View 1 (cartoon, rainbow, N blue to C red):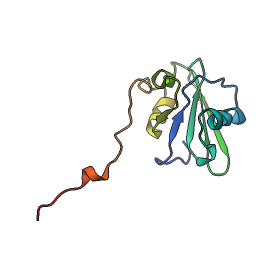
View 2 (view 1 turned 45 degrees about the vertical axis):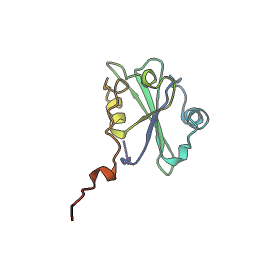
View 3 (view 1 turned 90 degrees about the vertical axis):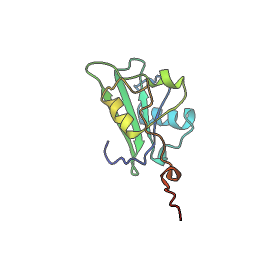
Length: 126
């Protein structure tokens, strides 16, 4: 992904989408169905009914970017099987694995546990 950092949040739409939609159709799904602000810079993943094609939509600060991928062999994992129609949150690493066709995405959470500073605090007896 060009110019994306680990601080970016990734959301997968939990329902199959008509991938003939372009910038306007997918951005309407983000704002009306997902109730997110597209211009916040988050990344949105959409998958069609036949899971060989996927689209990624994000705002890079200057304009909307729309990436499309079609797998020649195999199928993408179906995020809606895990999310049951809800929006599924992914990490950038999970998105990269998803776009490479990994079958683990959607079956099991691959995200590391959230960082907790308090668990790292070392108590030194005085």
